[in-house]
Amino acid sequence: MTIKLIVGLANPGAEYAATRHNAGAWFVDLLAERLRAPLREEAKFFGYTSRVTLGGEDVRLLVPTTFMNLSGKAVAAMASFFRINPDEILVGPRRTGSASWRRQI
Image (cartoon, rainbow, N blue to C red; front, side, top):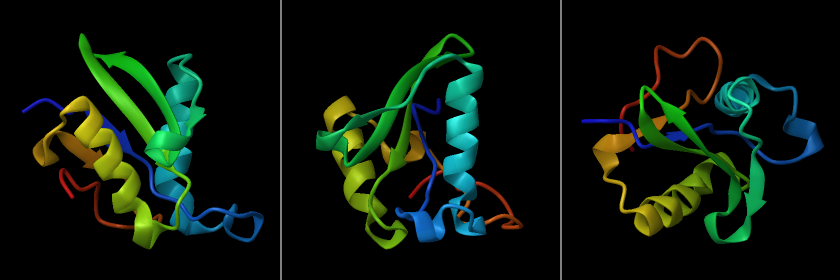
């Protein structure tokens, strides 16, 4: 199955900005920057989003603006809108040093 959504988890707020729990968001931010696809805030998806092409495939990027424990709200909104199945979602690590990215929620 093809990845159609890459999610970078984080916690909002200045007090969390430099914490290891934002590693997923840092990755998605860097990916968007390198692919020249700036993230834009979209209220209906509860986060910052962009669209990129990877390996010829259309892929959505998402950095939720919710706290990590509520990020499912943002992921569900985007997945539902674009008809993305759970096995087409790659969720970024919650912290540096975690074993790997998770393929599905």
